Length: 222
Image 1 (cartoon, rainbow, N blue to C red):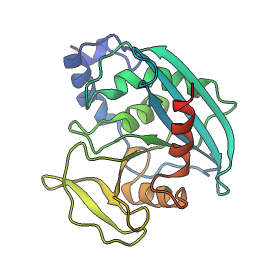
Image 2: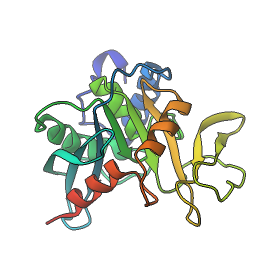
Image 3: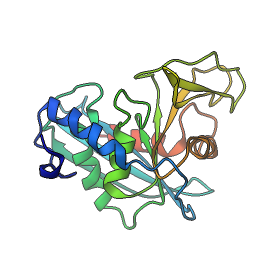
């Protein structure tokens, strides 16, 4: 499939075409800090457990630094792409994009419940969303999709590089003592060190940052 014939908005793809598009679009990921002032930090999540065959997305916008909920939106669409690990952005992003359009104003930074660069083709959901919308994004995942890391000290804020071969693709971050690490990776327009710092700023007493926690609650509502 020629990349000149496939736009970022083309969701009518086979799994093979979707993987090829990921390899093409990963060249557009910006791994440097291109953030302005962050006053609106959003979390995005999607769910399809309660509605088989449909995807419910949610965007929760929190004020920074207070982390109070100031805006939110949801959307539900028919799932047009199968559930395939590594290709979930093609299943979830259409509904997420609709929810983003329903906000009163765009966020300055988005934390995604899922991977970004820590992906077999270096183009997970956070990268896909960031490139598509031109907004700084971070991937925050609960489990490893690819890679390995050394043990993370049981100290809040400690982290170890997540490696695939010799390449650093993300970080295993201890969000709080006594809980499993979370996995942070860049999405777009942000460096890994800055992404870790922003995740830490959005953590309170829970394992997951407040923006994605809020989006998860919204995505799971009936």
